[in-house]
Length: 47
Image (cartoon, rainbow, N blue to C red):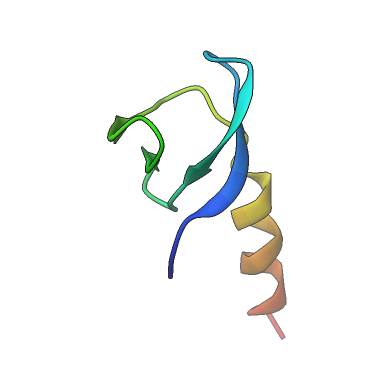
């Protein structure tokens, strides 16, 4: 799965971040970001 448009709380901006927390915009892992876009996908698999 590719990156999704997520809020990086450290930078205060939206960035392309993959499920592992790697920011495609910064080229490094970020740790304080909104992963709710990925949590929503997980709920769809539980049927």
